[in-house]
Amino acid sequence: MADLPKGFSIKTKNMMKVIVEKKLGEGGQGAVYQVDYNGKQKALKWYSGKRIKDPAKFYANLENNIKVGRPTSAFLWPEDITEKSSGAFGYVMDLRPSEYHDFSKFLTGRECFASITAMTNAALHITAGFRELHLKGYSYQDLNDGNFFVNPKNGDVLICDNDNVSAYGKNSGIAGKARYMAPEIVAKGARPDIKTDRFSLAVVLFLLWTRNHPLEGKAACPVCMDAKHEKKIYGENPVFIFDPEDSSNRPVHGLHKGAISFWPLLPSYAQDLFIKAFSKDVLANPANRIIEQDWLRLFIRMRSEIYKCPCKDVYFADPVTPNNCPGCSKTNTFPYYIKTYRYNLPVHQRTKLYACHTEKDSDDFQTLSGGLTARGGDFELTNVSGKNWNVTVNGNTTALATNAAVKLKKGMTINFGSAEAEII
Image (cartoon, rainbow, N blue to C red; front, side, top):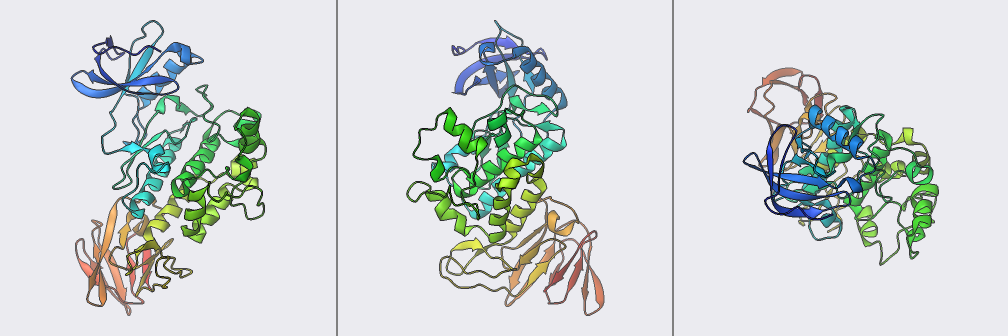
């Protein structure tokens, strides 16, 4: 496809003028340009009709997505669509901010997260984005490592390439990349839907934490990955590299360094959910795929248990089964735990409470509710939720207003309104 020249101009369906400024990149379906859109800098993704199986259907799907609007602000969603020019067309979206980097760079080590907290936030944001997409009645259909831009400092995520997103029951004609497609698509040609999205999401999350693919162990190398082998490994006989009952596809030392190094660092309950996600039962039965809510609750718990040991190493301190610091081998204990209706938070200076801890059935991991401050040998919990809490100690109940603090004591209970916690 020939590049659009600088200064190329075209009108949109909303009668706005788009003027090309420079090319930013190119993918399998089209190229992306920085453009002037009615006086604002935006991005234009431009397609040649020859690269798309059904251009008319594809165009109509984009028009519908523009009409419905983005699921959340995390999506670099189509905002306007151009008129057609010799069978080619494009859609306008926000530009990616410079502080966000391609997710694929994190997988190859060209970019690194500033902290484990940022990495956990990235997992939360990716999962939450797709939960909202599915709640809106859409499936992504082409989910892979090229669909995300990530801020390494805080783990914030932008979701791009939303041109293949379609409403339930509709299909954009794009199956996806073999490494991310669900086994039923690879082996049987099934159509993408919310269940295949959930497989792809599990793959992306596993890659985030281990830098290796969950189905690429010794069975995937050193063969030339032709169509026959792709169909076998990703479709006909997929085997999780850490399947506890099948060791035929274990990671290879010297080749799958990320999986071998990072898997042992994950909490056992996180390993358990990944084992379930890629178990033979779930791989073969799409209806049993791990739903977004389960992933969200996993990463909320993981973030709550991030702890910086006095030796400066950072790890997940499991309050249920106390574990040793990987740096100094010391088992760190905590003076208190905040036991909520779903989570059990170890108390230290970095502990924070969010709406997901203080509001029943909430998975809001971003709205801060409370923070801990060390006062000598004691800890104080400050209420920043905007709501009054009721604190009960030895049978006596007092109100804790917003911005007020209370000294933690074992046996204390805190009523947040719809949920309650106990200090143990």
